[in-house]
Image (cartoon, rainbow, N blue to C red; front, side, top):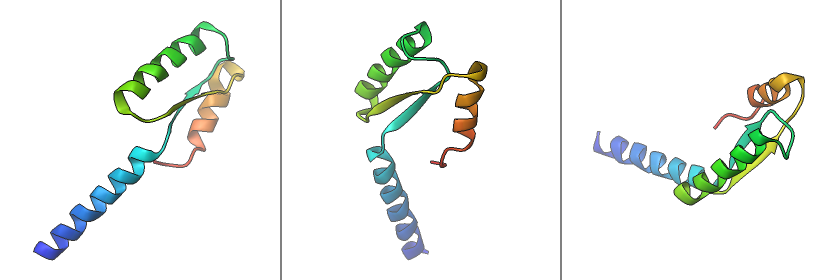
Length: 78
């Protein structure tokens, strides 16, 4: 029991360390330069400061936000 608990804790710690090094990608369904993009970039700066991880703003304009929704649906899981 103790061995399996220690192994589980080690795996959780290794997974947490791997996730902390990956950048966060923020999908925005509107073109760059608009008010939504500006708010997203302000939020990404605050998140970068708070989490200590890079935050990438990924603009996917088109079809009223559907392009970004499809990109989110097809994205690799965390």
